[in-house]
Length: 233
Image 1: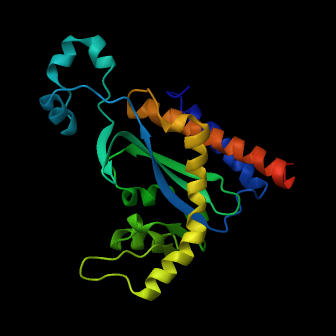
Image 2: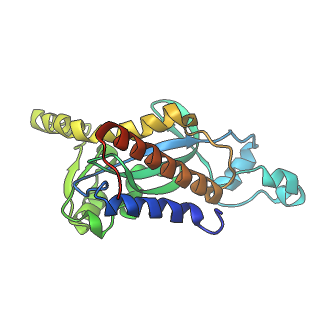
């Protein structure tokens, strides 16, 4: 299934149905990423060094059973002092009904801002784009401008250039909308095994994450029907 790309196809078929029924309304987009943790690998320091440089330890070639259990695509990273091993689920969420409109999977060490260009497309033209300050920078501003979106990304303060009171107030106002993306990841973590997987390799992991994102959209659709009486024709 994953080798044939059916995970992505299934996600896009349901996404397109939502779009055709105006449940993906294209009135604004929320971009963020969530960690998908994996079992931590027990490698030697030298093995980790080779993996990080894109090589596969040579002695693994003579030990196929060991090689099959080793993930050479997942990466280590830190956030708020916590060490994390695995991948990231980068998502673009439609603001109105909080459906996932698109996604991209990377190793956990990939910075959120580097994926922005892979999430946006021509359908996003003219919409507000909300994201936290991780998505600031000249490259990201150029990407937002390229897709002709309205930049609602949080402004970022620096050591010698702190945010002004006006900028802080603007960020607080943006947060009222941007926080909606946290509801998506919150549902996944509380109701969908806390985004902890046991797959090996980015290809399989991407396939499973795609199915998780599809499952979220299915659950969200059921909520919309139950709470608001909205359904697809």
